[in-house]
Amino acid sequence: MTTSNGLTSDGAAAYLVILLHTPDVNVLLRRIAERGREEERITNEFLRGLNGYYETFDQVSTQKYGHRVLKETMHPSRFPAR
Image 1 (cartoon, one colour):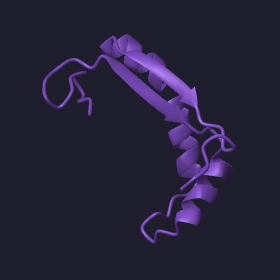
Image 2 (cartoon, rainbow, N blue to C red; image 1 turned 30 degrees about the horizontal axis):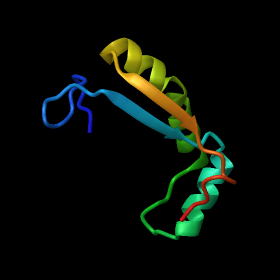
Image 3 (cartoon, helix red, strand yellow; image 1 turned 90 degrees about the vertical axis):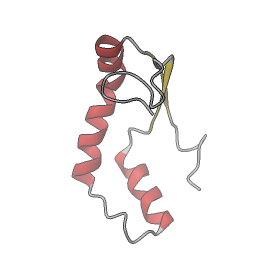
Image 4 (cartoon, rainbow, N blue to C red; image 1 turned 180 degrees about the vertical axis):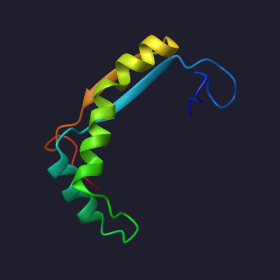
């Protein structure tokens, strides 16, 4: 896990950040519903805001911390929910 100062929890600098992203909020809501966990009451608005954060995460992480970021968009047909 990377801390706010760009270091991993053991103090080493992060070499690569892998960002797996599913931008379709409807897919995310369906997956959450399929899991059926009572504690996962997440709204459409929250997921839209979170997606906005993820859209710029790679740029911010690179500029602020110098991380190399591999960003992969997760297409539902390739990576079904479990």
